[in-house]
Image (cartoon, rainbow, N blue to C red; front, side, top):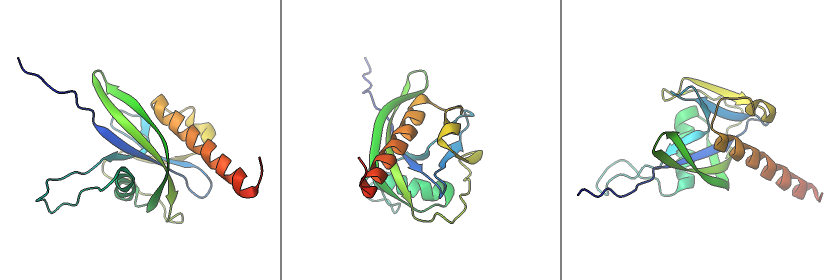
Length: 154
């Protein structure tokens, strides 16, 4: 009898906002909008390809590769399980990201068909997994709490 261990792929995603607080999203091959990011790169020790030392480094690399934006991973927003196809589950780790190049227009990589910037109200009507929508809402709420704290409001 063959025993297969249960392995869960991990995808690290980033929530990046432009200067007008619109979230950057990519359209995938399933015709869904999604957050930017991907799998951690963990090559063999003898490989010349560098490995990602941490999930936050992964999201920083992935956003640069997918859009040209330089970001710094900030707050960990949440983790959740996504099942894109039956019996294929992925652990999603979501970070809020600070865009370091806000004046640079994002570009779409060859991994996606479209790129878009959306306001919080527009996100609700998009075709995308509920977990992404929850992560985006949580990031906006966390930013609002931080902004109130900076201004000294309760």
